[in-house]
Image 1 (cartoon, protein in one colour):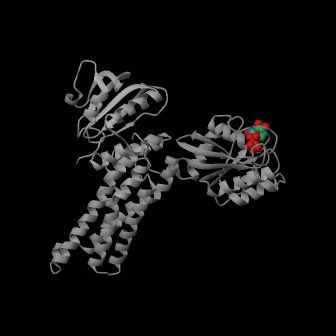
Image 2: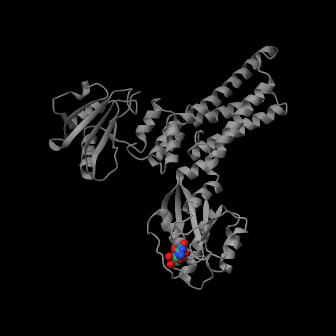
Image 3: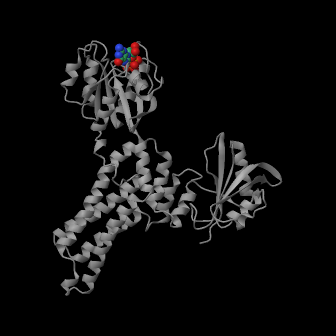
Length: 454
Ligand code: GDP
């Protein structure tokens, strides 16, 4: 397939040791030759794959920098095409100049995700493996990295292939049966047929059930810290995020806006939002902050409701409990280091709680443990294949709906031809899931979210 030659900066822009411009396509060597002059007069076009040359990079006559050119020959490259990676010193202006020289020499600027899209189109990786590349780059914690690596290595692809193969077999059985309806020996028994479909449905269900938990690990857990003024919300935020982002004072009503911070807690990433103390007030600015806090509560994955257990329970505390008791909430019974006499009240509420001192850090490990239990993150099999994007999730939902309908139809005695159409639909969804049969629109949508240079 003839393609134009694309180029992009592949390293983050900023000052660093090395910056890389990648060129990929039929004319990669020809273009690289125009900007890069090897020291020992090597000819890039004649260099073997996986070899490097040291030299200098030019924009026309103007010398830009020393450089190393790394050569990959089709099909043994990331994209499957001829590729040259030119490494120079990592400076924002310098690397942009190198890219400009490369485009002046005939390359087109790559679009976001275009290298990976080419890798997919050239059969170097499946669609779910390509999607995993993005997660690999954006992984925020070890668990997310592990999920991305496994998918990149093809774990999900293999799982999809197993289900696809089973459905293909059923489709072929049905077509044989349609051609020779009188020859019953050719046909898989109805029981086996049902068993096969039910196994596929169960596998699809597991993927769907794990998706939400996986999303919490991959995207981070949207966490609201709520509570009355002075309960210790900002102190907790600072403890978890290991910063002094939130202002801590003994003056009630200090946090008026929502203060956001990312915290790595155990194996997870919490996207923390420290909110204004929720209480009755006539202060207009504070009221706006409280409104924001309540809105956040409604959409959060997790609420850490902080209470000062060294003071009596107030009506504001009770109102907050009413508001959060049916949400994924952990009661954080704070100021454990003081004479905390009011804990009993909270412990009787039948809501998960943890005793802590946000000031000293005592109880932090228990807090992490409780979050894991509450969100059932420990139920996630670390070796299981996982869906990692909304597209994958929606496509699996479609496959499941068709497979379940096929099961129902079979059990209701519907003709095999009709069941076959439903199985075909399920098969089409699974083939789309791993990019074996997709429209350009779907492919474009997948790669649109990638960064340029990947
Ligand atoms: P917020 O209004 O809920 O954000 O409360 P802050 O985090 O600003 O804390 C209010 C006051 O309580 C500050 O003086 C903190 O130092 C103090 N405080 C917070 N957590 C603890 C704790 O666990 N123990 C003790 N003794 N004091 C705490």
